[in-house]
Length: 419
Image (cartoon, rainbow, N blue to C red; front, side):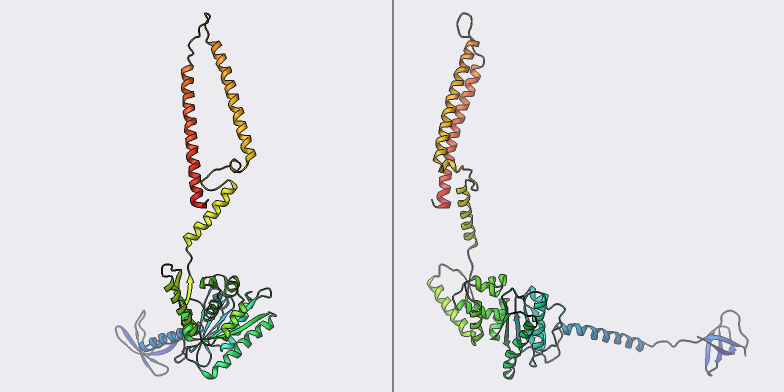
């Protein structure tokens, strides 16, 4: 921006100017030298920014960055205010499993999906900062919207409460409000499902964490073992809790109801520890699996199972005449009529060979008979003798080889099929 100034003094390099607002300024001479008393136009000098001004700008940018990203970290449960420690863990198991960490005010301060389906339903959901019942409602609604709860499915919603630092006056509230909010969503979606609340202690929650399953699934697993069902953690992770119980021959609702009514799981774990210790003492030479938290998780011998399956497959193929490693015609062993037919064909073939051989000999004798009646030397006789000799030796070799094959087949049947 330009302003008018009056030239007051001129020297070799600079000139002193008086501005309209009464300030004296210095400017470097450039071009034609002005006369003293002449009014000229000059540009205003912009005030130089100080070092502290630059620092203040950087500080403001840093504060803005922290404010923006702190909100995202808060929503993800990574950043929590001081004093908001988790005192209660709530897990919602449908097939997706999601774990919520609550503070003493029952506000969600952490969220963790416990399987891949859990990651799907909490995606783009802001759960941190919500109340526990609001968070449960959001999770159940998301599961219904994404098809995990459907009219044709045997829907089960299991809500688990594990208290790290129990708050007596909050217990009944959680057991009441959480299933009510879940049932509210099911009613709106016209879905029939059973909502169960399972309460466990923090010790069981920690053991479940080691096994990478939710506390409610671990509690139901303990009850299933108590009922004598052959169920493992692997089957639960693979097919889900409800299907694993059904596949083991149990009633899911009955097992879940027992887990819901159980108040002290630590005694049940100790009971299993004692029973398994006795079993291991009586059968020390045959260790069937490993022991974790009072439950014997069987590890089947995969190689033995593979051999059994392979033996069964080979037996079936052998009966069909196409077993692996053996080429056997079924009719040659089990069809008497075919056997008789093959023998008769072999007999006819030999007779034809004899007749053809005799006829060829007569023709050859006529061809090589001299006029005096004496038999002329046949130049092909020696060659034919060698050929016949080699053929006979080959037939003998084949017979020996066939006998060896039969012996190998019998030995194979004896070893593999126990025949």
